[in-house]
Image 1 (spheres, rainbow, N blue to C red):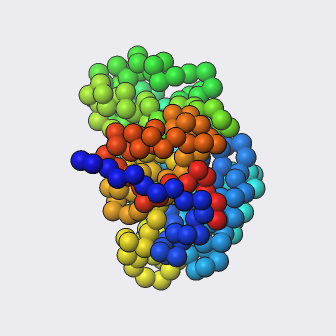
Image 2: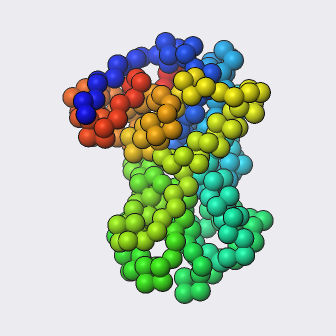
Length: 289
C-alpha cells in the first residue's frame, strides 16, 4: 500500500477549527520529564479558548491524579487541558476486574499508586495469579535484557502480564529510557500472554472520548477528534486504529532517526511512515499555535 507524504504545518491554528476535541500525548509533546514546553501548552490553551476540549492521554503507569501533580511540578498550566486519562487508570480498571487475585509487580515503587484501594495483594512471583508490569525497577541502569530470567520464570508458570505502559522508550530530557512495553514485548515474543492497557490499544481511547463527551455534553463524531503525539508505535498507530486523525510531532522520541530535532528530514520521515503503513493528517516539528 502506498502511503502519501503528509504536509508539514508550522502552526496548529491552521488545523484547529476542524476539530472539537484533542487527545494530546504528554511525554514528548507537552514536556520531556524535565521541563514543560511553553509553546505546546499555549497551543492547547488557545484551542480550549476557541471552545475546544483537551484530554491529555498518556501511557504513564500512574493514576491521572498523580500525573496531574507531576504536571503541576513541571509548571504545565491546568488551563491547558480539561482532563487526563492515563494507562494507569486503565490498568486499575483491569486490576479491579480481577478482585481477590494476587499480583506480582514489575516496576518502581513510585507506581504503587495503581494498587491503592484495590483488593489486590502484591506477592512474590512464585505465588502470584498474574503480573503487572509498569516499567523497569531502575530505568537508569537496567535494560529489558536484564529481565530474561524473570520472563522465563513467568512463562514457566504461564502467567498473564498486564502491561501498564506499552511505550518501548520515553524521553527524559534528551535521553531515551526503556519503559514497560519493552519488557512486555519480550514476554509476548517468548509466548507469554500480555494485556496492554494504554496506547495504541482501544480501551484508553474509549475512556478518553467518554471523558471528553461528558465535558461537552454529547456524542462526538470521530471526524472532529484529533490525536497529537510523537510516537509512530503508540500515537499514530493508536489514532489510526481508533479511526481518528493524528498530528505528528517530530521533535520527540523519533527525533534523531528523523534527521534531528531542529531539521527533520522529509525522506526519513516518509520512509518511517511507509514502514509503518500509516500516515498522519499533518506533521509539525513541535506543537506551536
